[in-house]
Length: 375
Image (cartoon, rainbow, N blue to C red):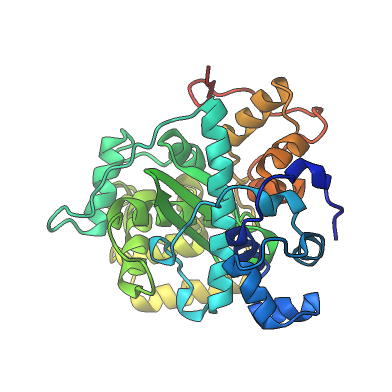
């Protein structure tokens, strides 16, 4: 367990916040009974703590067991992210504890987003709302978004940068929550996307395009446990990353397996996704699709992406940490402001950006227009 960062006198006078206890317990994936056993108390005692019936629960013990700073339990209510807001691809196989654990980390990311907005100006949300457009199928929606954003039939150079430019906050899934591919939601008008940064760069691009599909196609939908919505987001992602007309114009004669590697590098998608796209557009037969998928699996493309592209990095987060460091905000100080440990923030940006701890180290050059200080 990590030692508490704050002394008790820093939260003297502030009441214990029971909603924060529930959030911390859920973040650790613990039931009330399991938490009670770790604290050597009854389940009824835990219920009383979380109900606010006890003014002064044993904060030191709670902090140690749940591995959260004591100050965390005296802060204001944590932002709520209801389950029906969130698109979970693997929701049908997830337990209730897994869902609540993910929702808890989502709330921490929203709180970090509030900290950012209070100090730095970032691109405003700018996503089209196509959820109520009559007769608009996902493939046409993808073409519409491409046209609106001026991409037309060109490859998307940087999917992560594109979303950030449109006001989407992208965070990394913590290591213990990576049974999930990705998920997204919108809170107070701000879109959030969480991705598994241990995947190949090509797979992360598809996940980002998939979540973009949810954000523009299903902004008003209850996203819980809907296979139809997931298929629509998949269709959107395939069309957004590899537009049909552009691919048709590239094909001359009958495609060969070796053409897949040329096409995948051009469109920056995985080899498997490229095969599926060729099949979707009836450029190869079902028999050819099966043969190629077997061949690619034998070459290692089922579990990785040999000779793949470099992962895309968050230019927004890189600039944020650069500006914060110049303003005297180390990662430790930001964490203290949010009443969490440094590693909690580090998990949210893992694989996306380098979070400065001591104020040293080099970051990527600034990208004009992404970030400005709030006066």
